Length: 380
Ligand code: GLA
Image (cartoon, protein in one colour):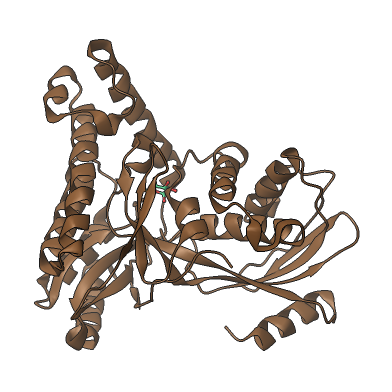
């Protein structure tokens, strides 16, 4: 995005000044490894070229003012008095992060922050993690510059989302936004936080993100419910043998679980973790078709065993897979609506988009959106 546009937005809201600083924080797409970050598993996300831009003017007092071109409400608060307020909506994500940074002993300055987002909101591309990490980076920038410890910041933002917002998310989203690398996906071990960058070269294929435009419903409560189910399954297994997290369970352990739902949740967790390992190997060997097949299996598992897809995500994935040039597709992110991804022959991209658009509309009465974004660096 052109800085001059951001400058205009900033000045309209906060007045002119000549020392505005500019920032960008990406959304993320998870290629494979869904709903296993909070089970100590492997995930494989990358940061995107769509995200949130900011123009910032630092202040000498304690005030923080936030305006977003994409949101109706302005948010204003003092660094000395940060509290969760229902009416502040999205602003609470910023508040949580700032509160916890201060609790770590940093002496922050106030700021006027103008935001513009190219990321669809609440669509499974981590708009909340993008905002959290962006605000953390902006507030620490005058003190630490580019020396900010990005993993520390990701963990702090996750804690803000868990404790200040009340969504019990794992570390994947904040980590991807903070640590993304151009043209690479991150193979992240969520148990140890060890990670490896894996170059993504899809050869004759392109990664397409398909937004169902079905807003995620009840996603927070259902998300927390799945987490609780996994914790219960782990407890049962731990009565028989000690494992640290559910990804360390084996298919034989399923026998221990009496409840059908817990069996299926655990089976997803075990098989999905295995699929991540296979997917990374296939990509390293340039086997894009093999990678596509694993995406299909991942979606089936999220649909039947983990039950986080729903009518709209299933419809868009099904229609995408009917198209001959599409070699794999799956939901991405938390699920219950939001986005799916597809791997499609580059030459047939246009045809693919109009085919899926039409077929999906016939099924759901909703118009989907498509993004063919590139893989980019983390917050900057
Ligand atoms: C959301 C959470 C992540 C992760 C995914 C599912 O995006 O924020 O931590 O659990 O869902 O893989």
